[in-house]
Image 1 (cartoon, rainbow, N blue to C red):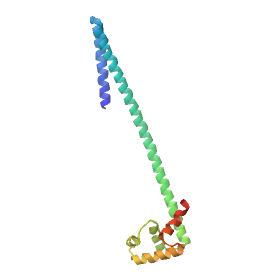
Image 2: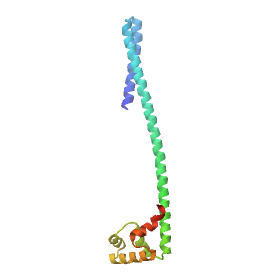
Image 3: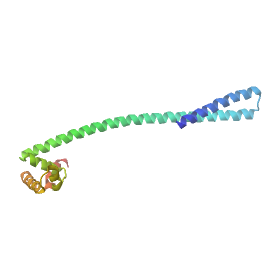
Image 4: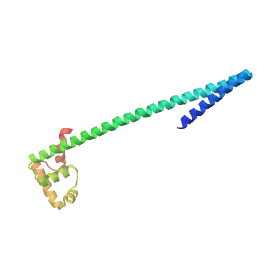
Amino acid sequence: MRDKFIAIILLVIMCLNFSDVFTDISLGVPLWHIISESLIVIVSGIGALYLIKDIYARTSDISRLKQELLISDDKFRNISDEMKNARHEYSAVIHSQFKQWSLTPSEQDVAMLLLKGLSFKEISGVRNTKEKTVRQQASVIYSKANVEGRHELAAWFLEDFM
């Protein structure tokens, strides 16, 4: 906004001095005075054109950046949707493996919470059970999955991604 105001002022100065130069020529003012005022007209015109060009370039850049931002937002939404789909598919694969291991629904819940990184205490709080019950269920899960503990359980599902 400030640049537009300055450009307008420079254009007004240019126009006023331009009319003053014509008036001075008709009045027979000395040549040095006409040349100095003509230089003011030229310099203010060049300054105004420079500012107008700069304003146009910045406006174009802002428009281009806004367009790129919209495209980027769309891509992010698509990636987000892709990630949601991948998450659901991965969850289905995990549950399918739980069924192959013959985990009960309760054991499946505990196993999923173990994979999410919750402690036994946190799992017992989430499931409203005793921590000892969660530990026993975890032992059964490890036995059915033929793994030594929570780290091997998590590694079993992450192994193919690495």
